[in-house]
Length: 135
Image (tube, rainbow, N blue to C red; front, side, top):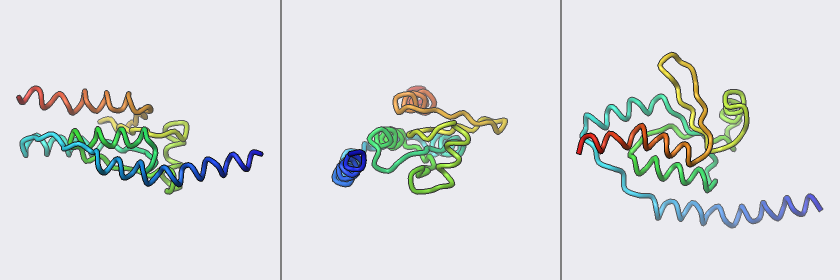
């Protein structure tokens, strides 16, 4: 019985994955506009960030849409298909759960932020406020 359930969910995932990815492509918002100087500062800050994710995870898609909306260039790390990234996620964050944003501090320490809503809120606080101040 357990094997039937496993294959059932694999089949559901095979059917839904292309639909989710197509939906992401069609509904990804335009990025916010910044001056070249502001965008360079944002790009520099983004070098300290990495998003551990699965390509067709709905919660990861939600975070990737927010990244696109904010015009961020955050490194995406596939924790499903890349064993090195999967191991780094488990060793650093303590569990294999996506999405997970790794934030590198100035002193080199890492903070691991889980949950799509928490990640989106952090990104908005960190990078969305710049636009309001510039306006």
